[in-house]
Image (cartoon, rainbow, N blue to C red; front, top):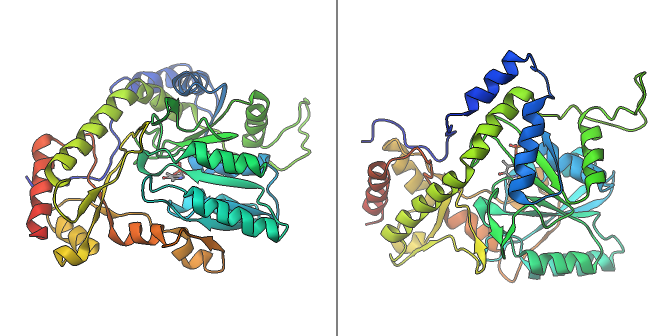
Length: 378
Ligand SMILES: *Cc1c(COP(=O)(O)O)cnc(C)c1O
């Protein structure tokens, strides 16, 4: 049972991916453009209900382009969720801007409206409102978009929704990634669907996505000769990778169902134990449960999160801590941070654990994981 490693989240092909990749070979469209790229964009548009989409080489590239198109420049301020993977914040640095980090609330684990309002008030007083706000939807849970959008609209500051982990999640019936000026998805190897590496930027503003496409292809002006008037990047998705994406889109809903079943099994087995709290699902939202996560009261059990992870690793089980918040990172030591009364993101980091959520994991394997967790806790 403990022989083959049980993984956190690994690529899970549906079967038709190879057909689309073969098509790319057969037609010799081995390039960062072609039919697979266009079709993959169409699928994501249709699925999310966005007006426009541009496939990119990574989610990070999407956040970079979004912030660039919103005019973020040297010396500007950008607000960003603290509890996230660093890819949400790195593009702020690429543009020479200064990130300011915002705490999470405990109901969604995502950006706290209270902390966001605090940050806006403080920066309004300084006369330096942010150029943009990057809102992350962690582990497949949508942030409190109504409250957060109302605050940002009130200050007239555009939102980039980092939906890298939340493709297919819903907030009040609307797809995660479609609330901000831009939404960004990731198709990295560990995400709910993958193209081996890739991303997509979506928006209801078709003109903005045209601009994103231009930015992603070295910002070439419309002219036969090679003319450029602005900075651009080489960020387009390959037609090979997009072929994988086409097949993956066909199984996305199935993957979400499987991820939710995995979470439900953990919840059933562990959720009622005193000292364990599963990651909540906000009312009126649909969590894609990319990763099953929970909070453990270490004092109560007399064992730390890291000790649990170590114990599981010895049994060939991959588990991870919750993301280390950006305001605790050496890289961002000098950056401002606004928390609720208590530092929630620090608490979630110190007590949270991501459990194996691989859709290839069998029920028996998951039972093995659950028993190992029960073992170390008792
Ligand atoms: C994966 C991820 C990204 C970046 O996506 P890449 O495709 O790996 O560049 C951004 N934000 C979050 C929260 C992520 O988990």
